[in-house]
Length: 371
Image (cartoon, rainbow, N blue to C red; front, side):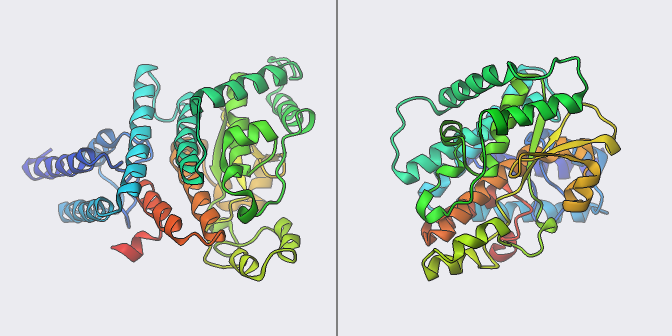
């Protein structure tokens, strides 16, 4: 790097130090293609500075990005104490993921690290939701999740096809065992009555029903225990007919709800549809032979199925899916919390989670309103 580039790099590192000193995760720069998908901020910045980034055509473009990141930091450090604490906990989750990968000599796109990272994210949001709901937790959330996952995996492994069978037969066997024999399922629910429990993995493991998000993370974790690596991702906004479109299976509920609740359900501004989460099998298959699981329906999808139903997600390569799975899944969980409080009419908590989302999602459209 030349003198100007080195100065730019040092400026980037000082900006990162600002995030680190406040224990705020750096996940990327709003309005650019700079997303810290790996969660390793220093490594990402080093890569951006050394390799160059599409769309940044000059050193001035780079300095503009640094300035934008500094403005993001100013927004995030001005939040209320409770929100700042929640953002700090997600920062600790980022550190835990990076440390886990380093200790186990995994790269950022290794499925083991991604699946472990999703459980770390679920632990964070479970603690935060339980605090909001006033639930006391006597045991470790992590221990509780692990015990439920291990028990389910032990049961499911008895019914799986042998490991030397065709991968499609084995994943179909896993789906039948999870949704059929053990009876896990998604049932339409309303946040007003259920609270935020449908998001929580331990709740879903105990009741065997809940949101597709929790079902996705449960099946992913169980699959990894039996040698089937499934990487989750929430439905992309661009695959929705409209932002916040209500799933058809919820329409019968509208007639039974109070008018103000039905109105919130039908609100076009209520955020991404929370009811579709997809798992992609990470097994080195050719792109045209990729296999997916629709966690809401409990069915296996082929590449052709994905391109017809969810073309934006279907176009993602295996490498892109591995790269984006963890951060997009975390943000999908946070978006669910926003949507739950929105539909419950809890505006203070909606604002709280929106700022948490801003910290974790540089692509969040809400950045356009606060910067």
